[in-house]
Length: 191
Image (cartoon, rainbow, N blue to C red; front, side, top):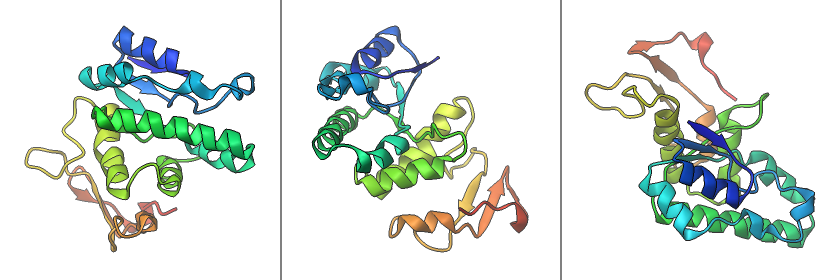
């Protein structure tokens, strides 16, 4: 069961309801009525701890907000960044699974991951884990995917350069393997 949320109260209620997944970080789309008091989007420690204990995956969907911050009043943008830092640090502290998801129908999870990388809210290694392990696990909870391990389905990408050294290396895919078969080069997706 997945809950789409907007505020910290929504987040807390979704955790109390015992959903499997929470889509959106509180404040992903701040309402103009609350710009004077962004605390409505700040999750509390107990909710973050409970989300982690219940293994509730939180899906980001922050790209639009991060891009829109350039157009916000500087004071509001800084306060919103602080709210995001608070929420992310609490979820990280308690080891709640965070997945990368896009709320952009014309885009991909790559756009979301790139915006998160540019924001500095996550390290590249954290993004890689969120994208390849947590996201896969929440989309396909009953399949053995997301790891290169014996007994797991062989779905993986081969990149010519290390994405941990430069996030843009995710754009260059030299080989794609799906269900153990190499896909033809014409089917590769590069951004």
